[in-house]
Every structure is written in C-alpha cells, then in structure tokens.
Image (cartoon, rainbow, N blue to C red; front, side, top):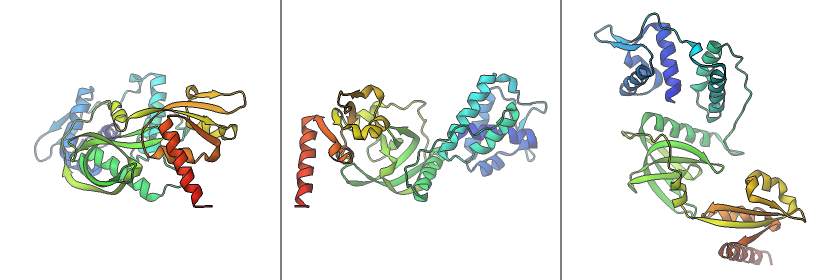
Length: 300
C-alpha cells in the first residue's frame, strides 16, 4: 500500500543517503513512474526530497533531515500504530516492518492488542492467494480477468480495472471499472473464479470514497420481516443490528431489516430450519413454502 511504501522510502533514504528510482522500483515491485509519483507526494507533504540527474544521480534527502516524532501528538502516535495493527488483518506483508519502525520511533511498546480475521471459517490457501492477487493488481494498476458467478449461478467472463477492495455486510467486494459493461461495478470476491492478473496496465484515478449507492442498484432492496424462535438468539444477535431486533414476550424475536434482493437469501433463511417464519414480504414467504414442499417430497 502506498503509505507503507512512502514510509519505507524515507527510511531507506535516511539509511543509504541516495537511492535510484530503478532500485526503488525493483525493491517495491512497482513502475518507475509510480516511484516518481511517490517522490511528488513526499515533497508535497513537506519532506525535503529531491532528485539528482546524471550517471551518479538518484533520489536523495537533505543530509540533515530526521523524522520528527514531535510532529504527532501522543494520541496521534497511538492511533497510527493502532491503524497499522488493524491493517495486519489484511495480510499486507509491508505493514509489519513499518509497524516495528514506527513503534521504535515513537518509543511505544508494539503490543498486539487487536487481532482481526476477515477470512471465512475453513477458507484455504487459494482464497488467501486470490486476495493477494487482487491487492497487487490494484496497487500496480493491472487489469484482471476472471469468471464471475451471479447469485443465480450464471457465469460470465469479466475484464476489470480493479480500484478497491471493500468489506461490507460480512463479505468482501471488489470495486472496479468493468470493460464489458463500460461502468464501475461491485463484484463479490467469493464469487470470483479463475482469477488472472494480466500484463496490461491502466491509468485511472482511484476514488477517495466509493459510492455505496451502487450496492443499492445491484440488486434492489426489500424489507424483510422475520419471526425467529428464542433458540436462535445467538444467531439473531450475531447477524442483525440491535435496532432491527424486537424481543417478544415469549422470548422470540421479530427482526425487520432491509436486504438486497439476491438469490442467497432463501438458502440463508432455510439454514434456520423450523426456527424462523417469514412474515414479509409475501412473495418470499411463498417461495420458501414451495421450496420446503419440494424438499419434503424427496423424503416421503
């Protein structure tokens, strides 16, 4: 990630005094254009960085430059370290060395006080590699190609200019520009298969803030009202916001929540067995009834 690369560049320059753009590019596995863009970012941030031309040229810092930890307050230092601790959950290998160096600089004990794991139970190495390939493609501005399965099991091959990974609603999504549809799209990472990082590069600005309204367009939302028995209290409190839950006199729950109209919802509700009743909408109640009737026919 760029912030880690910028910190590492400054530390390398403090240690080595001069580093060529090619050396930086090879070390970070990025293009020289990216390195020069990083130099501009550091310069704009007030770091006294400059370039020397010629055979013995390179990227340098003013000889008397040191990182002043006093620029950040005590709380700022703690927040920076805490943020990097959280980023370790994304399995970004560059975070750990930066975290150690900043902990030394700030004279703070690098205590692992938080652990976050976004992976699914039982997810294997293949899923972790997929995430790393997506991350690298985003950082290096490389196009990707993959087979994508909709909620109805329909497969299409997509070529994407990946821009961001987002975590929303207990799932990872890839946000990027779809060349097939010629527009920005979200793709659920768990439905991506046969991912291939292409040797094709693109130039596109990464939006500082993603328009989450796109989630509402794909697909449309509806109001779901459920009655769930008390025996499923652990799932109710795990899977729904407190504001959506209304506990009844018999200890059952009425849950009202807006969800995207997607094929996964039927399987999700059936996972509750006979402990759930769909109150609204009526069309979904009827779909669940038909599925249960068809399922029963296989056992009688």
